[in-house]
Structure formats: structure tokens, C-alpha cells
Length: 563
Image (cartoon, rainbow, N blue to C red):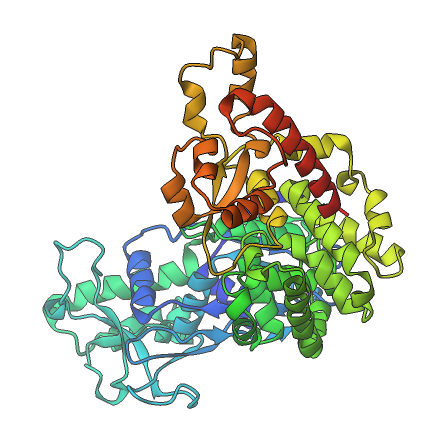
């Protein structure tokens, strides 16, 4: 169980820890995104005695990191664009020596990097229209104005700077009353015996009426950096990397809930910088709308542990090195499903069901010999709502079973799995699915594969109109039967898929009237598509016979679908 330790250090101590390699960042902390204005306001807050929030540190040692756990060093140089926004710089990955490095920053990266750049690093501004890959840019300095008569801040405006602190690229034309903040690190300021003389030298050009103001600023700046313990932190000890990632997600939501997959994508990009670009090329056409989560989970399924959900260097390199084979598996999946008249795009929001098929196709070149097993698995997983809960565990279970079954998905294998075994009870559950439910919609979809036109939009429709059961009952029907019929009117055996325009014209017509309005050819096609039993009355008085006869047909058809 992890332990929490609360402590505080000075800004100078924190920056020395960064400089000496004691402090690093986990690989999932990847980009520095602050603007120059945010850095300026951070220093303004410090001089205004505002707290700069608590930091969250993770104590790392040989017990909670492995040899392939990567970290990032803090940036010592950042180039900002012409709008003074930081370019998205990727940190370089490295292993750590826990004898030197013992702390990873989970929350506080932007603030610590900003402080480090201000005092020990370098900030550049890239000129407008300059190429992004050009090295550096114009050198800048972070300055504070010591002449109170030159202050240009608006005291009435909320969230504006109260001190005149700003970056300037005009380093050759500095005002004699501006002080470069990093000069406070000069030994003359650090030594108590020489500090008064150093301050007086720094304010020699400041007008007499501002000298006391200037002395207060420089003394305060010294105290904020070297004396006051402003870096208040909570250090978490005895915590594994999985938990550190979870902690990071929770503490860095920024008002918007972050998903673990977003951070996982950042880790993957650290190992494979062009990953997002390659993902974008794959996620087009039939796979548009699937999202990068689908690819990441597939990579974990193929090369790692889908339960732990962590992208390691090994998994990232497997994905990168086998990218062509990986893409081929997805193209093959699309072709296989198309041969079954199933559109892969149908699974854009329920893609977990496809991952065992991807795994089977990827590792078994003879997948074509067992299309029956693929189809049976897919239909069962969908109609039995296999992935309704415990998704990662079930994916791992499928992966293990495929491996144990000579890299195949077979009907026999499925029959050995409780959740995917066909039983009368599961078929009855499908038949009891009601209009609007996912199971009813999926069942009607798979039952209509042989005739539906992918260019048409279909809707779930009642055969015997729903509202007809709200009116008066037929004289020949008992009240007990009528109540039972009303309970069955919304279930699968009274539902069909009907093309949208036809459904709009049918509305609440009695089934018998709707049928009798057709010619012989239309009647035959309607009965075939709607699976209407032969020689059964379509009058409402005979609803029970109709319902039970159609239920028997659906039962047989569903059993065939399930393999």
C-alpha cells in the first residue's frame, strides 16, 4: 500500500534537483504547453505572495520501476512561436539510475519547467514565418521593471499582472531600470555579506523615488527563491507505475476528464513519434469514427497484456516494426465481414467485439478455413452482450482460448465458454428483447443480412401496430389473453425491419390491411423479409397464433445465426 509524505522545499532546491537529475518526469508527461504570459504570471503570483499550488511527486526506486520504465528530463531550452506560445516539444526518453534519480513529478510539470527555464534555462522566440524546425530563434530575457513610475499594469483588471514582468527579445536595448530575474542567482546576491551592495548596484539607475520599491522587489525575489519553501508537495511512496498513471490522469484533468487511453497515446508517441499520423491514415473510410483507442487496445491484444492496458517500449516497438502486418489484419477483417454481408463500420462504437477476430486473423494465416467460427463468435458476442461488463478480462480470456485452440476460433471452442455457449435460455432472452433495445436491433440486423440494402435506412417496426392493443379488445378475446398479448406486442416476435419510407406510409395500419394492399409479388417479398409464417391469419383476433408461429421461425433462424 502506498504512503503519503507532505513536505516543502525552496524553489532553488527544486531547480537544483532538476539540474542534478534527482527530479524527472514519467514518460506520459510529454509536452510543455505554457505560454510566455503564463510564465510571467507565475512569477507575478510568487511576488504577490499567492500560493502556487501543491505539487505531486512519486518516489521511484528499484521496487516500483522496471528496467524498461522510461522517464523524461526537464527541458532546459524552449522555443516559443511568434505569438509566444510554446511549440509542442517532445521530451527525450531515458532510463534512470535510482541512486541519482528518486523523484518523478506527477503534477507540477508546467510550473517547474517554467521556473527552470526562467532561472537556469533558455527561452527563444521564433520569428513569424520562420520554419518550425529551425534551431532556436531570438534569445529572450525575463525582466522585471524596478522603476515604479514605468509600471503599465492595470490595477483594476482581474487576473492582470501587478508587477511589470515580461519576456523581451530586445536584449541589446534593455532599459537600465529593468532587472533580469535569473541574475538573482549571482553569488553576490546569495552571499548575505555582499547582497546589500549587489542590490544597490542593480538599482543604481533607478530614480530616487523608486529605489525603496526596487530594493523591496529584489529582497523579496531573493527570499521567494532561496528562503521561503514555496514548493509544497505530497510525495507518494511504494506506488507502482500503473497506479502512478492512474494518479496522473486524476490530477491532470484540467476540468475535463482525461481517459487513460489519452495518456497511453502520449506514452506510445514517446516511443513512436509518428504514431498519431499513422493512426490517422488507418482510421479512414470503413474505420472512420473508431478512434485511436481501438488501435491501442488492438496493439495490447496482439503484443501485450490487454488487462494491464500499459504501453511499454516493447509493445510500441512491436507495433511500429509490424505496422504493415497490423494494417493488413484490419483490411482483412473488413474483407471477411463484407463476405458475411456485415459492414465493419457498424462497430465504430462497439469495437471490442472485433479484437478477438483481429487477433485470430493476425496470427493464423489460414483464417479462411474457419469463417464459420468467426461468424458464430461475432453473432454470439453481440446477441449475448458478451462485452457488457468485464471487457478487458473477457478479451484476455478470448486471447487465451484462441492460443489454447491452435490459434483458431471454432464453434467447439465457443461451446466450452459459459458466456458464449448457446442455450435455450439465451435464445429466449433474445426473443424477449423489446423494440428500441440494442439486442432487438442487432437481432433484426443479422436476421435481415440476406436481403437488406446497405443504401437504405431501416427502422424497427411493429407488425401488429403497438397502439392497436391500447384500444378495445376484440369480443372473441378474453381479458386475460388480451393482457398477455399487450405484454408481447413490443417483443421481437412482433417486430420487423422496414425501410424508412415504407414504415412512414404503414404507420398504424392493421397488419391485415397493410398486407392486402400489396400485389402478389409484394406479398411474397414481404412475407420472406418479415419471416411471416405461411397460412397464418394476420387479423388481430389471431395474434397469439401469429405470435407463436413467428416465434418458432425466429427461434430456428436465430439458432442458425448462432452457429
